[in-house]
Length: 335
Image 1 (cartoon, rainbow, N blue to C red):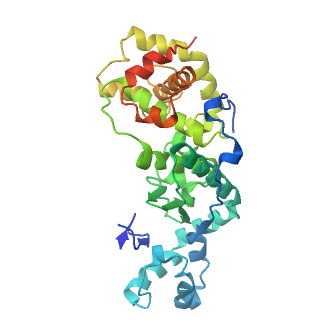
Image 2 (image 1 turned 30 degrees about the vertical axis):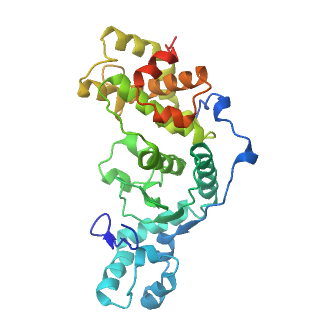
Image 3 (image 1 turned 120 degrees about the vertical axis):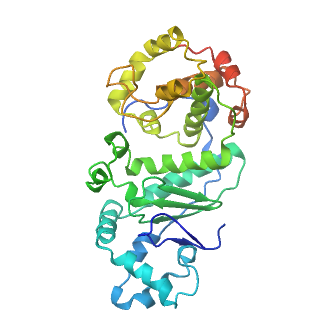
């Protein structure tokens, strides 16, 4: 058994070692619904079940959950040293308050189940897989560093990290607002598919230049186009409406800046990161600019490359090790 997260969390896994700008039409990613082997994926609400236990009848209540949630509870629940931390967990006043708020925000998870079922059906279609995970949600005590856990055929979602930007406890964590505003229900399926990509699809290649990192990020975003076609671009990349407008209106200026300063092939990791990593804005441009402009440009490059090379599949794209070929053959240059 492996303990996860903070000491204040009793979390044991056993048996395991809308805003504007919709995605542009791409016939390569459009799928006849009849070709999707869509299977409904139910979500098991471990957190909800746990905090609904009658603490006056605690041992019996835990026993009733063991079959469905043995992944978390393990065996030998009759041992006091195992039950005591669990009891402390579900009677912690902060966790009780958080769990109540989670139930208010998420009285039902039917919409999330539908989103995950569709996204994973598309994932299986494009990558010729038969991935049929068991999905759980739980109360993590605001473990924002890793809200999605994927291990083999198990997906675990920390619902308390997706309570919306108005949830006041997020501010007490010292998180910047650009992160808090993405801690919403709309981002759950996006984050799940990103983690699945990083763990199961992503090909590790040497990334020496800004172009290498731009194309790598662009591949991820194009994968999201394929698996989440109904999600607006702004949500997929995490921009506000104003930020989307800024990057669309100023992309040619950013491109000219990169050319003028010879940054496309800069080996300077810190310089590259200014255009790749998350933040409130991109240094060197106005405070209205979004961060990760390099990822956005890489996304447009990859889209154009795939449009001009219809024989290239999504798998071929991700398997490609030469970012320079994609960059050159795309012919992309913002106007």
